Image (cartoon, rainbow, N blue to C red; front, side, top):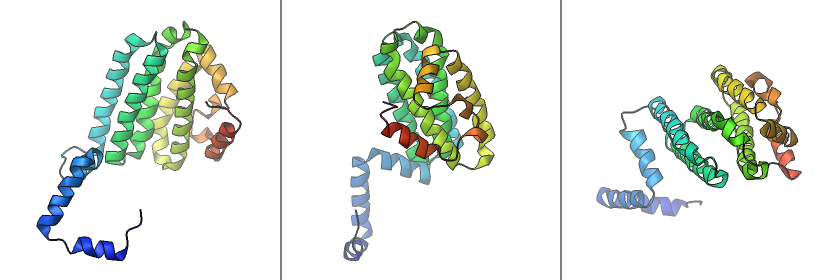
Length: 208
């Protein structure tokens, strides 16, 4: 929404008391903005602190969710909620590194249960696998937008994912069918045009 000069001038004309009342009214309605301002203004924890805490949360929640892995539809619902928590963390802290590392960690922890997943019928885990592939694609795209100094830290997670996917026959096959090349699981090997590649794959009806 565009704000006119007149509107901005009218807001500026408010007294300090009126501005305070307006700010607190807005914050009550926008919890995310409230958390973001708290983090930016007075939170003693740093972005790294918040990311480390989120890593623990992701690992703990995937572990708790694993008891429901036999119900792939419900398990995917839980994974999506964990992903939403990661998204909230990123919006509050603007943690671009964590946007990649936390999502890759989440997928890596899900694939710790490869044996349980592999025992299920393919059509039961299909949506979960497609979700995983989309998440990996998006993470690879984000990696290419980050400074190369960070890449070494992502490579360890990518190698772990590559190994676990290669041990899951149906997931590996689905990666191939949807254009996700396991040779890309090293930062230096991610194609420069990967974002466009993903768009083209989606336009052909894949990744869904």
